[in-house]
Length: 174
Image (cartoon, rainbow, N blue to C red; front, side, top):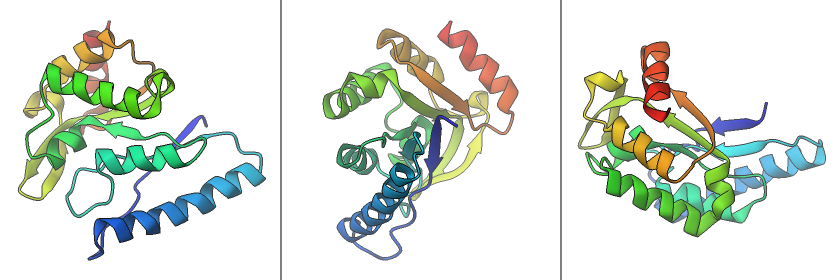
């Protein structure tokens, strides 16, 4: 394996700073074990879609700045759901990529782990994953921004119909 993504957890009634400390302490142990065992792998806290889940864009970026071999898994559909409809235009996708590069350096764009799907969301964020063509998620503008920034890495479809949406994104990215 080259890259392992994980869901960092829930706030569980904690204030975000307390949840951050809890996740950070657990991640520190994981990074130490991987290093001591000679496991050379990228560890990726995922950007989560529900407001009750730890894993905002800022949180996963901040965790990535604290440890070697840690970079975020950017789930653009989750970001869209977490923001309840925002982060869905070409300019917004560009701003996200600019922010990632500013905070983590060009390496983060050359070594991205991305998840996409269509998504249904409500007042509390993510409800469920959908196929791209069944959602308001603007995958065409995302593909345009990824191409413009020459993003490299892996893009994983989390749609109910994985194969169809993976091929759809492949065509958009070519």
